[in-house]
Length: 267
Ligand SMILES: Cc1cc2nc3c(=O)[nH]c(=O)nc-3n(C[C@H](O)[C@H](O)[C@H](O)COP(=O)(O)OP(=O)(O)OC[C@H]3O[C@@H](n4cnc5c(N)ncnc54)[C@H](O)[C@@H]3O)c2cc1C
Image 1 (cartoon, rainbow, N blue to C red):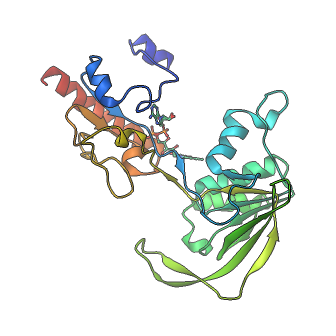
Image 2 (tube, protein in one colour):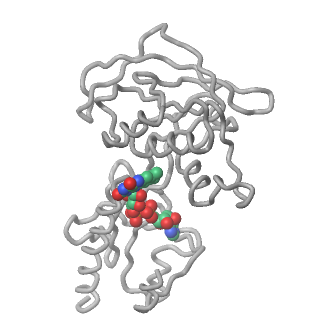
Image 3 (spheres, rainbow, N blue to C red):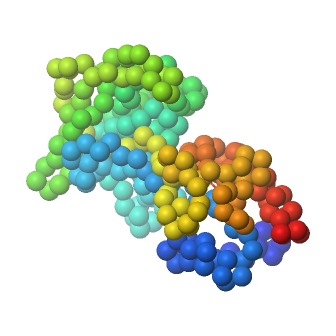
């Protein structure tokens, strides 16, 4: 960031585009080109009963509190985190593996992964899964929660779950998990971390007329130039691809920068 500032970049913080100013207002203020790199930061939830109980986090919140806001060093840092003894992380991706290993470091006695398909379908990198196993994470595969239970103070105490079996492949090409009737069981938990993916933040598309998005709300951009359907507006990174990787986002930024440069030379 220091390097960018030395090059002449002006950084405005605490500025939510679409709340303070819209993209159109930025143009009115005299900007000639806009690049949207707002990411896919809206956590998905299970949408099952009891999800508002205390002790149930999105992976975003759990990891942001523990790492970025240094809750691991509470009270030296003033961010608290509810770090239970029986922590279950829902999901089978890299974010789930980050979360479950964070739970171990925060003192969990039992750290579980619960994933609705089998180990073979897990989207996490094999070495991430392997490291989690090596550290003692317990895997509940082919299992899904259907309801959270809590106490009178509003804290989660247990989860009702269902066992699944794999059926025919679905649209993603992976075999669809099918619930096994009557396989319900209750599992005691005091912290739940939901790591089942993120959606794109709808704020910028909703406040930018004429900006085309796909059915998941990702901005549609030309893969070579990163130009969007709006004149003078580029987009790249997770807001275009959905949750992906740093290297892809950085690559999109470079492609867009080249094209924005061309555009500004010759609008
Ligand atoms: C837990 C976790 C672990 C990951 N691990 C890896 C990994 O190991 N390797 C890897 O390559 N990738 C990893 N990723 C994915 C990687 O973080 C993303 O692909 C990458 O950060 C996308 O970059 P981006 O610039 O598109 O969006 P982001 O990095 O999400 O940045 C978007 C920024 O825009 C800001 N913003 C959003 N809306 C607005 C608005 N309206 N106005 C102003 N600002 C706004 C946000 O606050 C944010 O700072 C991980 C992701 C997660 C969640």
